[in-house]
Image 1: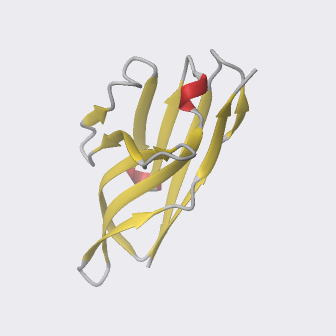
Image 2: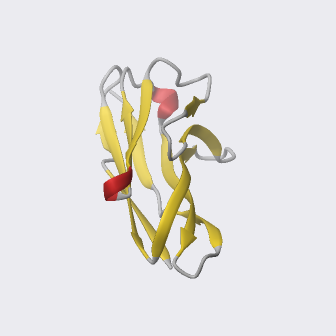
Length: 120
């Protein structure tokens, strides 16, 4: 019903920057809270940042001051600007969204993930 597609991952040196995008498509009536999560090898998936439809944001302590989450409601797209990247930021980054579809029901959706590798 709703598809989330991430893009923008890749290999970057420590101290570098990347910008992730998450584009939502499908039978969307409204997208509510959106968020970025990440999962490093051997670790549990963890919250990176969330943003409400109105623009209120929340960040994990580990990324505060370095990452910025934003969204374009008209385009059903969310972004994550990642600056001052560290090797410990290496993970698969997943997009998540709570969306109401045209039938009126609300569901939680995940993207397929995009790899971010921070290494020299």
